[in-house]
Image 1 (tube, each protein chain N blue to C red):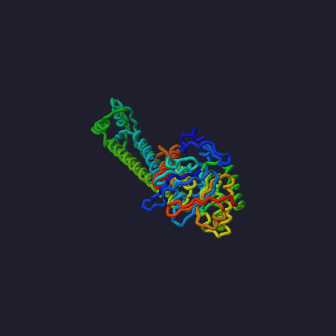
Image 2 (image 1 turned 90 degrees about the horizontal axis):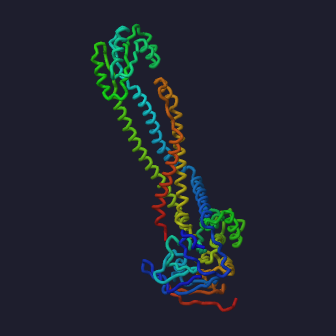
Image 3 (image 1 turned 45 degrees about the horizontal axis):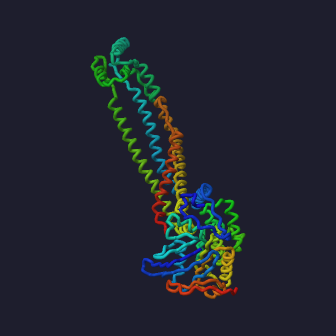
Length: 225
Length: 329
């Protein structure tokens, strides 16, 4: 579902963020990307969302070669991608409903369908009944869950998250991670950048370890659950 | 499914996926298009309503800028009508020597009527002249004081239609012994024509300048709106919004600005018409109701409204083109 072939990324400043990176994530697989800060975790996710393009090498997402994706087609690619951010990036002047509905409206989904899917999505993250509230009325953990609801409302085949638990306490972090685990169980490919090693260990999933832009470990758990 | 839609540049999807793939394709085509336009339509309206005072102020500025050329257009239209009225009365007035008796006047009138270049001759006796003067000018009280009628008899001579040398004819009458004065106002009419032409051109130039001002005001308002919503635009792009989707609410906002300010401008024009109605009616009465004041007709009003809306849309388009073209990534 996600495939990197010898991908390098050098920024205009000369800093090499990724070096000869190759890995493949199957459909329905869940993986963590970890490493110290500046190891290239965010860059890796940015390449998947076409927020950046690699200097060398190829990235495939959902069978599509991103190098051949033209600028005008980038929005279509992003609609097949659920993205969760550390700072959740909600529109603070809109209600929770409007925030979660936004990807559907962008995709041009019919209005009667929008309501159903927004409620289903909010139900999944345990926030049904809060649709009319503004995001500021929620706690940080709840805001992050709204961000997740927004990411999954279009039922994307791929979900990527950049430090989704960065601002949360361990209890909330565990809940959020469990939520991602559920999406993987219904067939979504999930890739999460995180430096919370303890949490990652508990999740017992595949872990890609980056160090200075190089993939130094690709750890797969054995059948322990 | 994408292969059928040339507009969608996505590559054809890969061979069949396992059934676990839960994504449901969004409706493409007309339904989605309508849905998105409705969204932009109402959300842009909502944004204007969210800041009523700022919006109203912008609208008022633009309404005044649009009303000014409209009022000029109205004024010129009425002036042109007056001008036409004068041109129709393109007669030569032949004032006869005072105290000429009626027989001599009618003999002269006979002679003038026989002239090959003359179409009609109307004799206005001193009594008729006095009566007319009394009715028209509002000097009736002053005229009552006079013992004698100071007015001479006048021959109103209409030259034959299409006569180029009406001035020569006037000069010819001037040489008659019984004629005191010949009034032929060709020069004056030409001057009026030139004044009207110049005023029309000035109005057109002013209208163009004010249209430009409206364009800039709307462009700048939309530009500030875009800059103020930078984060929202970025989030929308992250969620897969196309350039068109991001641009559309701003274009609608421009359209609203233009349409509303044009409507307000029409209201201002109506207000001015109402305020001037009474004094103008008096002016018309003094001209014996030979013409009437024309208000703004429906068609020009509709054209003004459409122009306003178009200007708004265009201003917004320029602003979005300048500030969204450099959209990230």
